[in-house]
Length: 379
Ligand SMILES: [Fe+2]
Image 1 (cartoon, protein in one colour):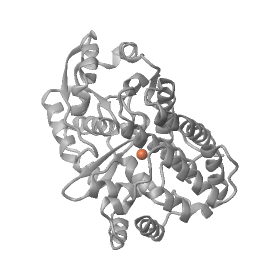
Image 2 (cartoon, rainbow, N blue to C red):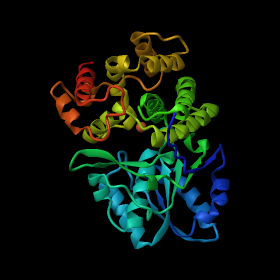
Image 3 (tube, rainbow, N blue to C red):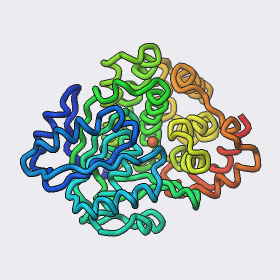
Image 4 (cartoon, rainbow, N blue to C red):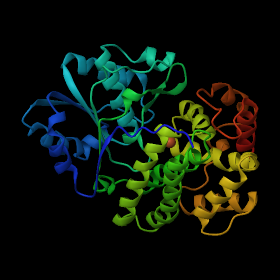
């Protein structure tokens, strides 16, 4: 039972803890602090609340805000953030928002520390070094787990590439997970990001890089999502369910860094890059075909997942498949690739665009990637 485990991020978790957590971390904040976020977060007042708390800390000169990050954060948005941070001599970067804002903040911290744009890390797969500025991640959705992971997923619009900048130095120094910040997330985004939590749990469970420790976290997260996401579908103001989902999202961030995801995550990236649709939607288009074609490669694990998701004994492909379809019908729905504009001939184009490690999936191969796209488009 040999494995390595990295959980280098300090965690502050709890409803209503935002201010106390920032104050507890006051030693981390000095000089000029950059807050990276989205226009929505700015309009809702989240960035101002955080800026006011950070500006009250003794070693902070002032904060600078950069709130131009969009869904599937773009390379040029990150490079602009790096320019602003260098110009202002920023010492610490705070990411506030969903996965897009956090991933952008992490890569801005890397580029600012190295005093260069992020292109060579993005295109060349180079890992950011120790000059990366300290990162504070404050998620306002429960889904990506980016607050605990070592990757920043970006898109290059011109070249239609979506891939990750990865490395140990991208781990945030601190994650402040306050479920109260997720209370205003609308239903559709709650369901899509909730499906992402489930996807992290399922894929990190099946990954060849998983271990005894990450298995337990996956099992806990699947059980939580199975119960709490349908509860939120019935009542979006169920704060106890929100709290559990934030917790599940956070612990799946640990698994992202230590066990990784498998085929559906690699396969969502081309869909996101070509259609600018959400991460959760792209994952949901792939899951049924992926389960159908790869169940036989990991039957026992799939049966455990099916039981955790449905509460019923699962002993074959159909019971597992149906457990997912039932769950999706109750939560995120069943988006289809053909509804996103794809047709049969696109399977090969999508398959050619897949980058990253596909070998951690029990069924990972280029042929399988093509077959899954083909089946998913035909649904
Ligand atoms: Fe994800």
